[in-house]
Length: 248
Ligand code: PGA
Image (cartoon, rainbow, N blue to C red):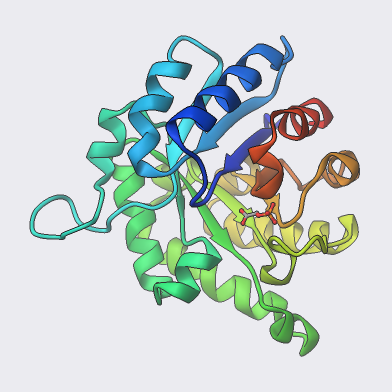
């Protein structure tokens, strides 16, 4: 059995004061037998998050990582730095980075590899645009995105990654993939992982992301290949985030 993971993606939101309240409320409301829970916060707030969450059951992570180890890369944050502030996870290849920062499949794969090599768990995002879905290219697009990762990772690193299927048309739009639509893509991705490594196919958690909310979480999370959620908007409100954790 794969243990479910609910990860918040705060994106570019928050302040010292707001984060303090949000983290305290999540900590206080976390059910005893919760699934794995994490928050991925803006890099400048990782130290704050570490001091608020140390000793709790909630893990934390970054939202991006450099493909390079260290050196003259102004503005970038390395995997080692993320580890230094206690991160367990890092989101890699979110569609907002792919589209606003022109991150190619190859760059995303290198970032995932660097994260894994440093002991982080990369949450590798894949997903199609509305246009791609409507022209029947969903499988082709997510295959291309995941294959770039499979091409650079050995079985040992691959077993430790998390994949997030996030249809671009569902992100922040209030439109969710139906549980069956999501399940179909998750099963396809699992088969792809399994073709490279049987163990990875069985072990890798595949999260769904894209307008997951308290009222649709249970149905999505009950599908056999949906192993958790990557939560944007709803992770900024403690009661919504906790309701999703409770549904997992
Ligand atoms: P959303 O974002 O839950 O606000 O749709 C999900 C994500 O972008 O990770």
